[in-house]
Length: 327
Image (tube, rainbow, N blue to C red; front, side, top):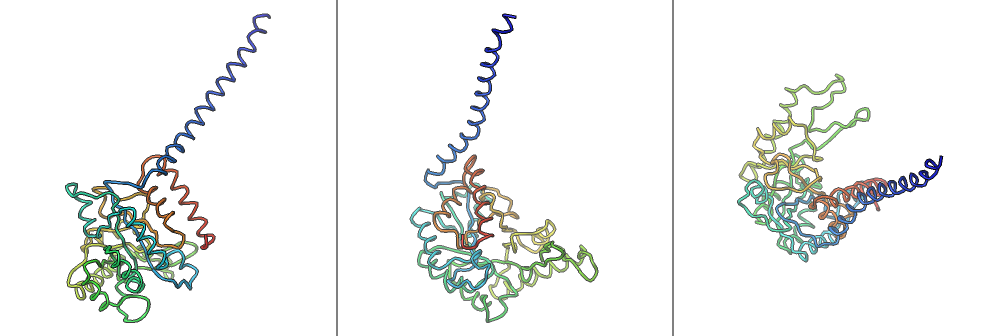
């Protein structure tokens, strides 16, 4: 009995030490990545051996539609972005040069290299973005919706205007499809025009032969416009909504598109990145001031804890922005 009695305190003490050790290990596993991420966060932004491609849409003071804050920055805000790049020594590389560099390890990538791209061929690119880009002497690329630009009026640059702007060595134009930048909602499901269409009258999806014919025709019309107005075929396309099924990518390659740009912002572009899955980071919205821009670039180009922890914050910001565009 004495032996049993004297052993109880020893067991309790041992259990307490074991629990304390377990708690210390768990706390260390949680706090150490956070500490590393904090150190990464306060260090100057400096990345190498990778290229970040940034996406904008509209540059305008006018935001009459509810969705506009999600894809519009003001000229003042855009100037702040460009000033940030200049002050922090970013190297702004033309898109065509970036595509070639990424596929050739013999080509050097300067530290903090970015590429500036704009989607849709919106008229505000020429009216508001280009004057600022020329002031900073930064190259840029605009992705053109062929059919939308056939009109000489409206919100999109016309092909004669595109042809004239293309004479500027700082300006490059590439494809954004001819007429496949749309989607439909059917019973709560989204069908993108780059996917097989849903045919409501027949209650079925578009057949594979019909889908291939439609997409190849869309590519042909876009390529014909580039040949007619710019005197060349095109080898680079940005996916509408950043989305496409694998068969779409195969058809794009068959139509002469060697490079396919997405809206996948899960990482930057390293050497030998898949040329049909080029990553882009969308920063063309009203909540991305230079502070958030810096955080986005650090999170995107870092490795380890900061990259993992930071993207949780990005997703949280996206949720808040969806609920309140003023966030």
